[in-house]
Image 1 (cartoon, rainbow, N blue to C red):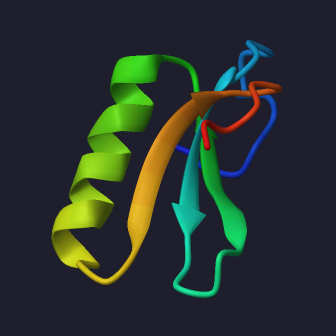
Image 2 (cartoon, rainbow, N blue to C red; image 1 turned 30 degrees about the vertical axis):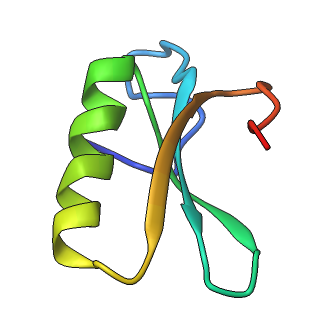
Image 3 (cartoon, rainbow, N blue to C red; image 1 turned 180 degrees about the vertical axis):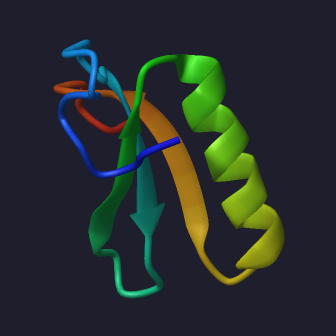
Amino acid sequence: MRGGDTMSDSGATLPWQVIRQDDGGGSYRVGRYATQAEAQQVADGLDHRHRHQVYRVERVGQRPRP
């Protein structure tokens, strides 16, 4: 799994991203992934390890929900 890249080694696009929301309201991309399931698995693992942060999965170019 390679987060942060727009393309994998095979040239496939990575349309799903994991976003970290910090306590101050800032949002930061953690990585990009080929499938929603893969991105969700990463987000779930980060949620478990970093309980003071919020991680969400969204499609690249999708506006975050309020």
